[in-house]
Amino acid sequence: MSLLVVGTVAFDSIHTPFGKVEKTVGGAATYIALSASFFTKNTGIVSVVGEDFPETTLHKLKKQNINIDGLQIIKGGKSFYWSGKYHEDLNNRDTLVTELNVLADFNPVVPKQYLDADFLMLGNLTPAVQQSVINQMSKRPKLIVLDTMNFWMESMPQELAKTISMVDVLTVNDAEARQLSGEYSLVKAAKKILKMGPKYLIIKKGEHGALLFDNKQVFFAPAIPLEEVFDPTGAGDSFAGGFIGYLDKTKDISFDNMKRAVIFGSAAASFCVEKFGIDRLLEISDDEMHDRIKEFINLVQFDIQL
Ligand code: AMP
Image (cartoon, rainbow, N blue to C red; front, side, top):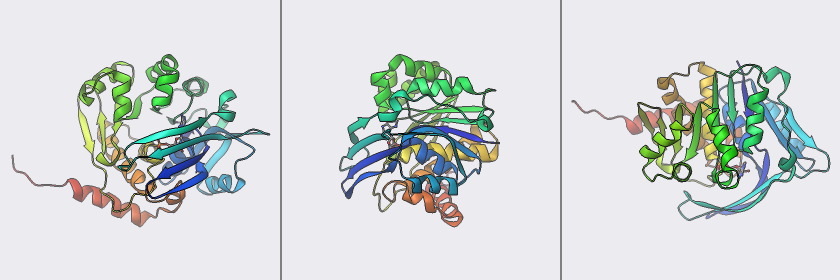
């Protein structure tokens, strides 16, 4: 069993109402792989960075059993850079800067040992690069999950629609689901998006939880009401990493098991937001995960006789 993760490995500058960090390590693939590595020990990354990317972070990834053979380091190049500023409510943010840098000419190469990966997580990245990775796989993975964002909906809608048509699960936030479908109702949006190709759709609603749809049913997972949220950056990616990491660990892609995976993804996201950047994901213990899952169970348990 193995999991291949594609996405950005990046520098982020983040402003939240609680503080500011400049050029900290982030990127969709970084968050996804770190979150998945809690559940599964054979995760590989396909991505690109510049020579400016810190060696120490590469060591941290390797220490979490994340294989970086597919992470290209471009001599003299600059890593992808993103900067965002959160509003008071933390559910909304403005992108201040997106510099593609080495991502602009990225030609992904899937390492040999991941060509037959059972699980493929296409993190936020150029849609054409995501397609190239699907096309390189020697057999169709059991499950392909795609995450994307408004940036690609606006700049490359046709390329993105093609990638969406090739995957099993799409994860987007509520605003992106509305933008992609042109529907305000999330139920109508889900119906339209599922017609674009995926069998399952996950709509993330930040501190208001997440919805999992297929053609027939819908499941809702709450978010844990946290006392302190420092930095929501990477929450969506950590969710995706926990979701697919749990599916890889349990090897079961039924709707019922996806419900559990959504809870584990939500738990991973809840840890991610407790500190700036990737720091919290590097130190989740088994006991902490156990206690947090218990909190989810208690949060939604009630007794009604019908
Ligand atoms: P999230 O908060 O889960 O949406 O993910 C935030 C991460 O996505 C940051 O670490 C950024 O480096 C990365 N990111 C931001 N914009 C893009 C983009 N257009 N394409 C790929 N990754 C991005």
